[in-house]
Image (cartoon, rainbow, N blue to C red; front, top):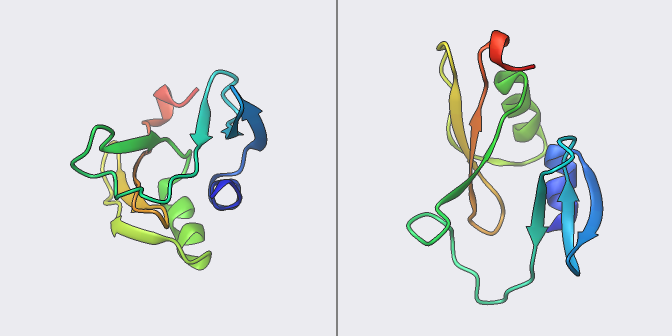
Length: 104
């Protein structure tokens, strides 16, 4: 699953507290990957979804689709477009494109 997150989001594979992790370009953000054969989709559970903010949500979604990613809801043109995607294990991921003045 770490390979999937690196392929879809970029970042650097690493270890954090003994777990496989994806280190994002934000120095304080890690996605921890723990193997669990009994995992269930995230929606409606303790962790409903993760959040991510690509600079260009429309380009991200186009690239995500070419890599075989599952899109739950397409982004719409708006002041702050959002979209939901899903990883292969059922984890929902919300994408939010911040307005240009907030993205720095």
